[in-house]
Length: 191
Ligand SMILES: [Zn+2]
Image 1 (cartoon, rainbow, N blue to C red):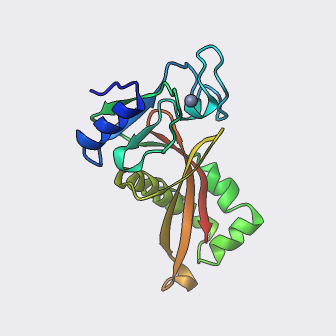
Image 2: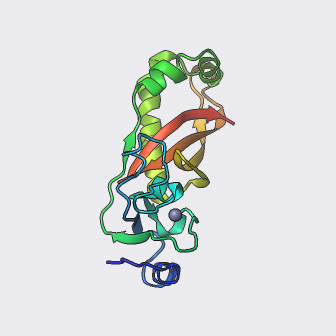
């Protein structure tokens, strides 16, 4: 069990004792996290925790893909986790009321052969893809801002119907939320 308070200890323990796919939960004494703040982190003056540490509070990453955000006198520590089950924050409306609704997004989907009837198939595909790729570390760390640590997953989507023999480079944009929740922000975007 790892509870470390200094940068040196975090790194020496992370890089020697645990293997690359070990999971860690970043924590600090603040009661605030992204969920408590309704998706917009803020400084916690009562515990003198900066908004970046609030945004990362209680998030979970594997050693091989951790946000490289630390600062001097950072009071965050990392707890090693044995079992991790990923859940997604991904309302069906992201597909039915956005991807197959917004004029431009709908045209983008159609250009790859997909129509609104495919909503459920696309939803399941994205949902399981994100969970699988988060576990395998197959994603890119992007910016850490008040909305959290952003990550991107790139993939080739098989076309459908009149585009069935084609493949399309796409990506999914997510934000890592506390307690192993991945919020799917941009469900699908053709590159
Ligand atoms: Zn901080």
